[in-house]
Image (spheres, rainbow, N blue to C red):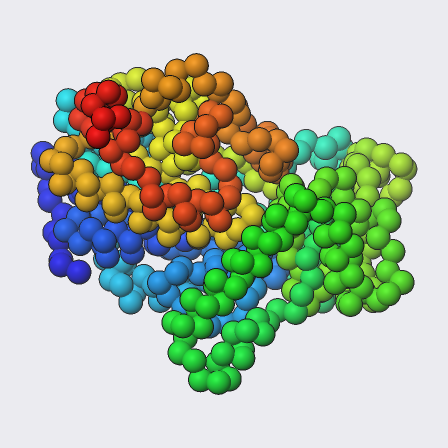
Amino acid sequence: MASVQMKSQSGSATHVDVVIVGAGVSGVGSAYHLQEQCPGKSYVILEAKDTFGGTWETHKYPGVRSDSDLYTFGYRFKPWVGPPIATAAEILKYMGEVITENGIDKHIRYGHRIVSSRWSSADNLWTVEAKRNSDGATVTFTCNFLWMCQGYYDHEKPYLPEWPGMSRYKGLLVHAQLWDPKTDYTGKRVLVIGSGATAATVVPAFCEKAAHVTMLQRSPTYFYCHANVNELADRLRQIGIDEPTIHRVVRAQVLYDQQMMTERCLKEPDVVFEELKALIRQYAGDDFQFEPHFTPKYRPWQQRLAFCPDGDVFQAAAKGKLTVVTDTIDTFTEKGVRTASGQEIEADIIVAATGFRLSVMGDIPFYVDDKRVDWHQTVNYRGMMFTGVPNLVWVFGYFRASWTLRVDLLGDFVAKLLNHMDAKGVKRVDVALRDEDRDMALLPWIEGDNFNPGYLVRGIDQLPLRGDKPEWRHNQDYWSEREEIPLIDIEGAEFVYDGKRRDAKKQAAE
């Protein structure tokens, strides 16, 4: 890649072609695609933390690991050579290699927390102000394009319900997101509140050293149990196939299997559930009882399916190290909690695995020509661009497939869009409703019967709106988007360049 020097503009501001927000999996992957596909573009990554990693740096609870397989969570351009389900440390090592191998490190500005982003139509520029952690100074960047890769949740303030009596509890109460790795839980009674992916991760880790672990859940979750190996990858290595080929082939196989699973969850959810139970019995025994603690009230994949490598949660339950209680909390007590049914659960440590607090665009104030952007008043274009907000793309990944798959897809799209703008000699791109969209119904960001995790339901009024046409929704379907996004017509009527909408009749004639 040609070396591109960032230019100082107006003395106090640093100007680059592109500002990427966040040095997590989205930001690092996007930076790679930008410099590979748009080698003439200067860019900077602004990261609020003092290191890279995002999610994998935030979470430090025992056993923290991926809940997506790394053959698809890993980038398409760098082979993954470890186990399918990996620890945070393994993922950070992988990301660090991507950063150093591709010279991305020199573009990252750590400890820069963005405090405002302002678009000027007169200048066709974003002005991004950030507070520098090291000295508290405010520094300014200007850019032509803003690539939002900061994720979707608040990394500092998780979602913690206000349960009655919390102040009475005398033990340690901590949200999993805020866990201090120095905390010693050896020989302690640990209560985990929650049943999603975080609980599925932390429960077996606590069971290794705690005196006993109780998982208190309001409602059950689906689990997918499998050995933490990929037989196809291991066999290909055994016969001497090179790692890039292994990565490509195994990635394709995993994606095919996931697609089949997603379709079957819609068409035959009861059959899928019986198969999931059969996998669990391989680890917990043939006489394992699923009622009432492992029979969810929703169909598989309506919420995220918790991957359980080597059936570790169920092995712990079968060995008597884990007790599961399905109930709601009546109140906290001095020694633990009392459930709605009257059961007392005593614990030395209570860990709330109760999920995230949604953070749209990092809770950064955005302005377009001095008017504050209300994201809920915008309409999203394929879950990545928004009406009324020029020269901006947001990376929001998948729930049923690995988040990083969309990082790769949108990396290609943004590079294509930027190169197209250069070829046209234009400075601004907007998405706008077409004539045929004027009477389109505007609906919540995502359909509740499609996917309804708590953090989205709680924060749906913060998210942009969707339409009832494919272009104006984030369908959460990687298997259709991998065909559709590369074929987007960026000269279509929904794209407006430099404020000039193409003549619809002329476009139809073409």
